[in-house]
Structures are given as structure tokens and as C-alpha cells.
Image 1 (cartoon, helix red, strand yellow):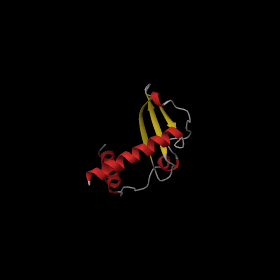
Image 2 (image 1 turned 90 degrees about the horizontal axis):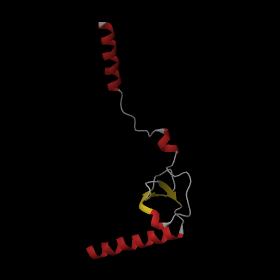
Image 3 (image 1 turned 180 degrees about the vertical axis):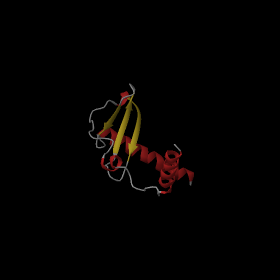
Image 4 (image 1 turned 90 degrees about the vertical axis):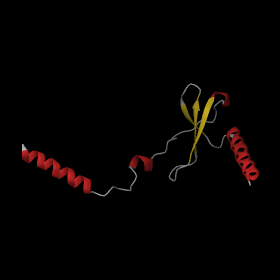
Length: 99
């Protein structure tokens, strides 16, 4: 029984000495969160918007609906483009006032 304990301790010591990897898991590298997007999502049903911009995926917009369902919205949707332009202008104005 002592030999088994020593073997386990030896394996743990070797495992702890292995340098950590800096590579990303394959699932994070090759897949994007949004695989398909919707063009028609009523604005009044959206509770929250999230924007994801990752190196291997296109710009992604995720809407959390009032029923807690999450859907991907096409970033080229006209109302979303208007929303983003207004949000950017608002940030620019607030930065000008802060200076």
C-alpha cells in the first residue's frame, strides 16, 4: 500500500512541475458564439444588449430578451446601426465635456 501512495505522490509532483500552456482550447478558437443572426427582433422585447468582438469572429450582437432568451442580432440591422451611432455620439459628447 505504501508503494501505491508513493507512486501517486510522484505523479502529482511531476504533474505540478509541467509549465502551464498559453494556448487556447480548440472550442474557443474555432467557434463563435453567434452561428446565425436574426434580422427582425422587436426593440421593445429587448432587455439588454451585449457586444462581442473577438479576433477570430465577426462583430457579434447578443440581445437578452424580456423572456430571458438570448438571440443574436444581425449587426447590419438598420435600427441597430442607428442605436450604435447614437451611442458613439453620446460617448464623444461626454468626453468633450470632461476635457
